Length: 152
Image (cartoon, rainbow, N blue to C red; front, side, top):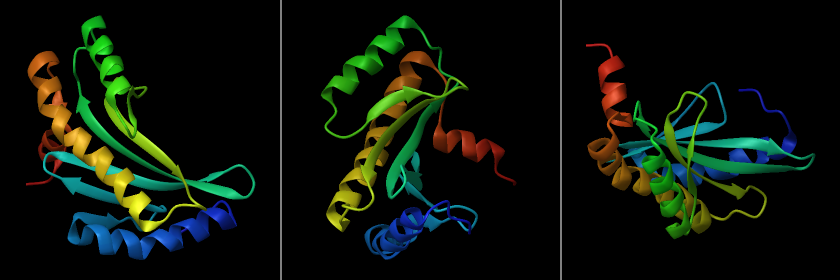
């Protein structure tokens, strides 16, 4: 695995045992990138370690909540209003029009309880909101999209 900075490598090595301890079989470590996938209910999240500035790294957890929803003004208003209620993280729309929920923390000062709060917040919010969004604006939950593309 390639790292872009010593800080990225150090942060990733710090969280490897934490992710295994916190999430066990629900966390899968990627071999090609400094990342983990975590699944809870119908939600799947990706926790990545990115270099940031010259001597720092960040830990970002993103869950794709819904793909293919009709991005109406009503849905955009709903997501912005819900962002106002969130303690950790926020909804966003990626370049493909997919709805995600993401939270990022600083790598050098992160401890295990902070990592747990960040990852759980993201995956639990995605699991809570995916059904609501699909029922009102259509689209597919992340788990449904993966199930359709998985080999039989």
